[in-house]
Length: 384
Image (cartoon, rainbow, N blue to C red):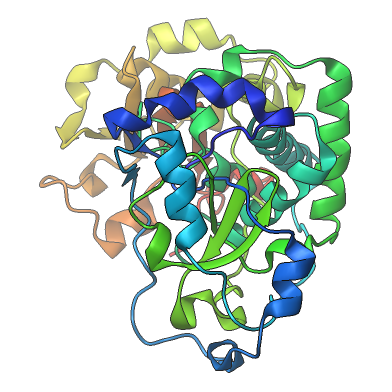
């Protein structure tokens, strides 16, 4: 999203808005203002495009970083005012129902609350449409299938993140605990099925003081405070497009760990094997010379006596200080691919996988639970 904080409760982002002239690449969800929504809805006529109940045969639209037009704030507002709102009613999204466990739910609440607070300030009326856009994206096939995945999509880049606050340093600015709790309460309501009908099936927004190049190529739905809301034209903006299966397996976001223990480091030494001295395990793990590296991916063989915790220690030793590391491991050395190709049989015999992306705060170790019994489902690799 190309997010910019709105005026009033969103006034903190004004400095970011002035960067328009540089035409910097900014994320896809933006937020502007326009006529009162009630008046907008009242003026809409029926739109036949909304009648479709089947997904189109074409692939979903690409979600790419966007450039802002190099225009002044005054010109931006004039250009935005010229883009008409859709004819016809704004079709409401269905209530959202979160299916993850308590820990995953806590992480989803944090990520959604962060988007609401940093995109819209400590103002519940401005926060609710931001939450609706996030949940609309989660259910659309063009986007990640978790709340945290949607909010922090692209945050590993300095530009191009979908929600600007995740890559412009805004998270270094702290809100009060009271403001966080209000945002968490609003996020909880959204995950429990509260729907903001004002923005319908919007998947994009921006402030009215910037003009992304995509603005006039999408359907303009609504204006709330200084935010303008959009959906894709045609079938990919219709209700049938918002039926993707949602995952409850919410990732931990390291940059939220100081606000919430739900995003703290994964304590596998505790949850998998309490007696393991992880430091000793890392020191004794197989040396890097046993690994094969293909395009930033490590393939490694591990001892057949390995445990989940010692396998994670092996991954940490192999990945070292890399900011990004993807590793696959086997306890049968003969099963390790020699050419970097992950065939179906290689995947089937894989003992574990590990992925680290420090820029997005993501770390995950998964295991072959047919081999390692007793692990929680969230620690298991998907079966082939």
